[in-house]
Length: 240
Figure 1 (spheres, rainbow, N blue to C red):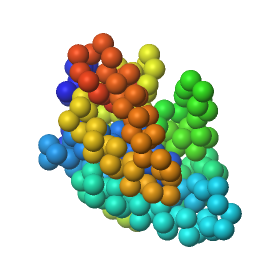
Figure 2 (cartoon, rainbow, N blue to C red):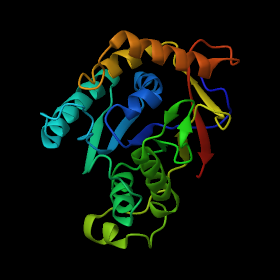
Figure 3 (cartoon, rainbow, N blue to C red):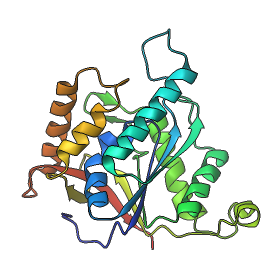
Figure 4 (tube, one colour):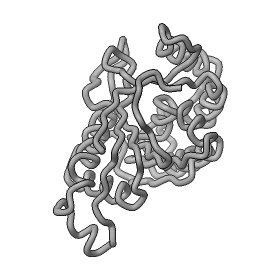
């Protein structure tokens, strides 16, 4: 269920995030809903989360491998059809032209009808300080969607050397849990799948009951006033 009239997200949706588990917190309920409806979902992860541990005995290289396996298991749960790992260093992401080119490459390769990404304007939410990789990834993804993937003279080497022609992404969604949100997807039927997907990130989730409580509380808050039990919320842009 969408609570703001628009034509999105279409039948091929790309989720672009900084780390394994970011997509699950932001939009796993919607992803599970879309794949159950026969839509295709592709994940693009800028990093493999190689710094995401308090355990000094685990090397970043080993952790990255573990988290990529976890993300693959999660995508099986959600019905995601493909994962692109860009393998930038965790904690060091910047909105560079190289990163933008790499995101443009995957957009032009998969030619999505919609992109879901992190909100680069959110520096904090309540007592939570936004990870700098989230902001940088959101900025790079937005810049890749508009105007870089669209414009034929941006990164022309992608067309000349890789056959990746320009592509317009009609629908862009930024994760939003504040007053900027204007699209809400009903995840009442898929919240259990969202919880199961998050708990499959076993290197990150230490207490599944706490995670489930957090997920339900946030989804219930997002749905408040919209006549549904659980929702995920986004800021929406039509670019088609």
